[in-house]
Amino acid sequence: MLSKRIRGPLVRPYDRRVRIEICPESPMFGGGGTLALVGDFLLDGLPEVGEGLQLIEVELLLRSRPQAGYPVGEDSISEADMAALVAAVTEGQGITRDHPDWDRSHEERRAKGPRLTFRRAAGRASVRIVSALSERDVFGDGQSRLEVEPEIFATAAREIVAALADLSRRMKSDDPFDASTFLAHLSTRLEHLPQTQDELRATLAPLQEAAQQRWRSMGPWEVLDVDWTLFAPGTKERLNDPFFFDPADNEAPHGNDAGADLLVEYLEQRPADGWAFLHEQIRDDGYGSVEAMVGDADGDGRELVIATAFAELMVRGKTSDRIVALALEALDRRERDAPSPRNEQLRQALREAAPSPGVAG
Image (tube, rainbow, N blue to C red; front, side, top):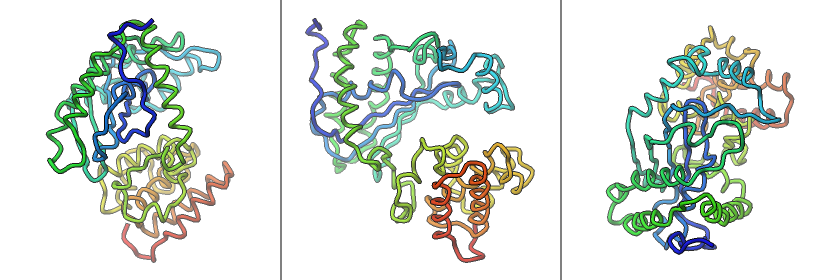
């Protein structure tokens, strides 16, 4: 039987207006994993607080050491093959996990310190936490399916609540969100943290079921939860299929690794000259020319071209005839290597958006 101390409000059967999404990150791994339900735990039983804040995105930057192990199992890649794969794709000219610079970029991000931002127009907050948790704490030793431990779960919950303490200062008195009630509720939830593995399992089971029910009830656009404030007016009307914005579909413009990274960089820079931005990608990725990028046998080069074209269309609402022509060529090559109806859908979207010749990129 659960102790009285950890009994908190049961999961409420309404569509919560605010969500907390957690992404633990390390040099090797990323994703909610075992901490995905920390946000649901903290929000459990939340009273009505208004609609001014709908999503809190938590970037939990883990300590690089101790490292998590490689996944081991019947369907897992061997450690030797994993090491070769990591060497091939990791930033830093193929460095591996035993290289002293392996975690350099990650530690540089941690060195920037914590951050809390609130984007009023989008109703979203972003939180960066320099966590005391390590990669191994969250992602395990790779020998078996990892079940989160109560101490790890509690540490993440406390770090998130502490990181949100200044949220009320980011808000105005007329914002339609009761930050004081919200923060008080989160603090109260810390008093109900499970202390044993059995208590944690019992606490998380209904949260998991509720999360799955919400997921099953969502439509495609709800699942994607696109932040339209990042894009040009009318973007959803011009690209009116969730496929174009799917971050998990390799055929989508930004659903593969190359395209996803490019969109992040494009949003950070918001370049005035798309053609110049594309040439930066050529230099940064070691291609000698645009032709070499489009003709990349591995496909990453052409994915960068396609991703650039659609980043332009989404963020600026337009692009140049040169970038459209290049992206169409890249799609033609992709179609020859991997035929798919999606290639034609992307081509059609580019043709409809194609500017008049001479439009600046």
